[in-house]
Image (cartoon, rainbow, N blue to C red):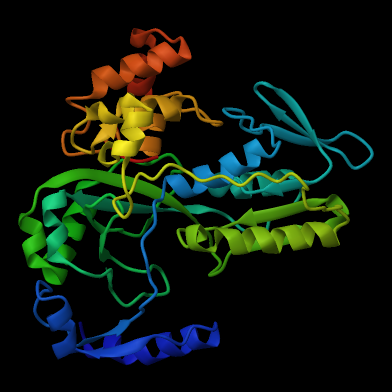
Length: 386
């Protein structure tokens, strides 16, 4: 958008090439507007990254967890670590509200609380300062406005505000980048949304006339350091994986491989499982066939032909699958992230009652108690994402 940003593009391409990616290409202003005719006036050029893509932010971590569980990992939920102590013979004793866990090796991937846990292991090398990111998700009717992910030139603080399609067929604007002291402040702000709208008008003015489906807020685990805080303490049999910001989704498998190598160097014996089971998660994006579109799937299970959430075309069969999965959904928010139900334009106004009853039937919870729990979780945060 200005000469300074234009001058920064070659160094971004050089950095990519240094990391082994050489497919970036300079794009003139004329070519840019041919590719994105709805872009606001004044853009001076761009750098094309042909292999940049979008991904489902919900399914990916759930896939990692599911693959672990089906291969024998015991997943202990709703059990935050309160204290860490030695139990002798190099064993870590991690106390939680639901009892103590014993571990020969400990990996701290505590996100916003990674610094707190790291201090319990006796280290004080970083502090997590939550970086609030607010997002606006526009209606699916806005999708024809763009063909690419449109990302501003990144700064040292943030990758910047972008306009991007989502795998669900919407258009997303954001995020903001605001360092705040409160690790629980997931509420949206008037200033944040106003700032996004102002930037959105410059990037793509027509987008601002489209309907908004929802506002989401996330907190990134930023620290005073510019890079991830991955540290190995072999003598303690402890690894800290802290300061993993939003780029951690793209980097997650590489981070895991790096940590596994460090654990092996620390003495952990690692052997491939002879009976390893891979998993394939249900598709909830628009790039592939959804169950309601598949005559074969409906013949096999008529519930895939019974739509519960009409905004997102989510079927009864998909909701029941989520409730009966290896890591079953147990709340409305859990169903939302696994299926897209309640995620659409009406934000559950039409389907929430049916979804609530399905969850209640599968979990044995009374509907009133389930709704009270959901209200507690959502109090003061509207439709925001935790």
